[in-house]
Amino acid sequence: MKTILLVEDNPDDVKLTKRALRENKIANELVVVSDGVEAMEYLAEASTAAEEGTGTLPSVILLDLKLPRMDGLETLRKIRADERLKRLPVVVLTSSKEETDILRSYDHGANSYIRKPVDFEQFSEAVRELELYWLLLNEPPPEITAKA
Figure 1: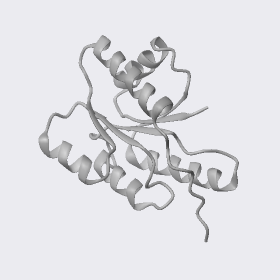
Figure 2 (figure 1 turned 30 degrees about the vertical axis):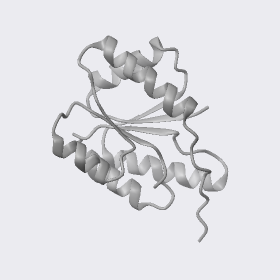
Figure 3 (figure 1 turned 90 degrees about the vertical axis):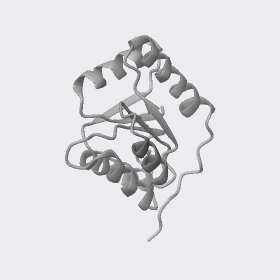
C-alpha cells in the first residue's frame, strides 16, 4: 500500500485531511508529522528501511509551508539535497497565497503547489484529485538504492 506523508502542524487541518481521505474512500496509509524536523527524521528512517528492503518511502509528501522548528521551504530544500529523497513527489499544500512562496516552492523543487481551500467540499475535491493523480496515475521513478 502506498503511503502519504502529511507534514502539517495545525491539528484542525490534519483532521480535515483525514476526513477528506475517509470520505473519498482513500485507504492509503497516512503518516502525519508536525514539522520539518520530524519529517526529515521520518524520511531518514524510511530511506534506511527502503535500502534494507524492509520498508518503503512515501509515494507523495503533502507539505505545509508554515511549520515550527523547520519550515516547509527548508524541509523541501533538504529533501531535494538528499540523493535518496530527491525524486520523491512533494506537493506544497498550504494556505499561503504569497507569490514569493509559490516561486520559492518551485525554485526549491516542489512538484505542485496547492492552496488549501477554506470550504470543506472544495478541500475534499482537491484531496480526491491529489489521490487520483499522485497515487494512481503518476508513474514514479524507480526506487533508488544508495550504495556506499
